[in-house]
Length: 338
Image (cartoon, rainbow, N blue to C red):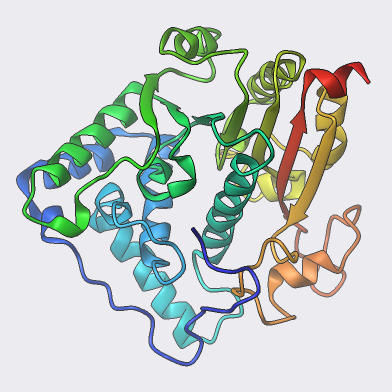
């Protein structure tokens, strides 16, 4: 599992781990595939590779040997240069830290949900799974059937990369599924048939489920995001249901209004209104969401946490108070009827 949340593993004094690319990235298959991704995919689809690059470059806290293959050389080099620049300039926030914290938060909450009283064999559904590799790196999934839902071209690219890794001589990147089972479901969350496709692929609506929506909601329209959340909330009437999701507030989405669409300033009020009984909100830098990576009290995230959530612009410099909220919500038929 991930590192202890109270132990700093941030290489503050030493050099950042050197960028060493796997020989697999130079293979014809992966070079051609990542060239297609760069030229043909839109920003949303490419974000899957960008996220993988962040995980690969924060390998001192996230063990994900497949991440660099999913990312591709271009994204790896781009983010690595940003990290080098941040380190040189003694930046208070190093590029990728928010992604690293977010990944570790989802890892830790998923493990906790599956180790709960009756959660060991729960299904796990990743909506907008992208290049996520949890089914290959988390042992807590050993009793769980995992479903990865995403665009068909994303899942096809992912399968191609995994096949190349499996047949290579590079043992370090050989994919081993740690989940009980893994099923990929080609579907578009903006269409009305994604749940039907999920159930056709073996998802059992009446079985306890952990739903993971990491880095996906804010790419959807307000209408589509609410549809997805309502569908998951309705499952609380059938079985024990856990939702792990991240939300941006309005100020955060405004930083790139052409990319980010859905926002919610008070997701801890929205989710109970949809039917979830227990809802917990964390912000980056909170005790359960820092993992020793945000020690400087003057970094952006710690400064935001010190301000009331109603404040939209920072009183010190007038910058927008863009926030990323990490939400854990759950419900069950017993809670719904009580």
